[in-house]
Image (cartoon, rainbow over all chains, first blue to last red; front, side):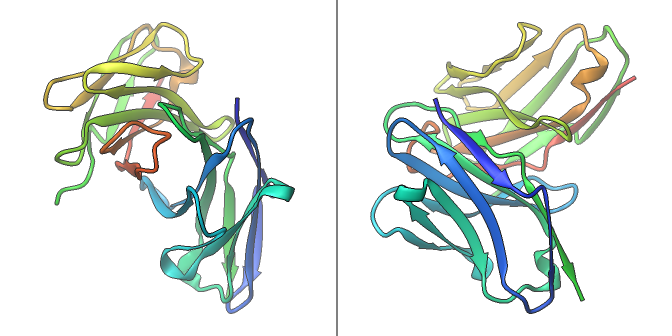
Length: 114
Length: 115
């Protein structure tokens, strides 16, 4: 079984400041890891994903995440927050190989303060 | 290429009724997954269909059911609606089954309100 923990249901940053959204996972086998963003009244959009290979993953809109197996973490970062980054962010995990369901974290709402 | 479409976008029902939601995946995608999103429980996996077969099922009662047609379009049905079924229901499609490296693309969701 797999699970995801997102630390902080609400995060506030100033415009131009570093964005750091935390995600820890538990998995019995190598995981696939994802970050999604959801804007109000919209579905989820994939920001980035880790499957295998390079542990630093670059995504859209300037976001990136680093897979750290020893820490079972997959934190999302962006060097400089924009007002348009205000949204809810979801970390998700699925198990490698075969047909597996995706498990999502509870979500983190990012507020960007001008 | 058109994205994932879900109909209807908004729905209001009363307790005890049943409801059917529809999802049209991206052309060529064979996998459709359904999720329920609520403020308290977050995103919870309902079920996944691949080539008309249910591949995975989440921990939901039997009142929640689904099916997939030969053109990959999917429907989910909720019978005997309860107040707690009020949620945003999201559909996602991908070329292959979830858990693969393939990306899931989400639709805008159907907002169901049960009165």
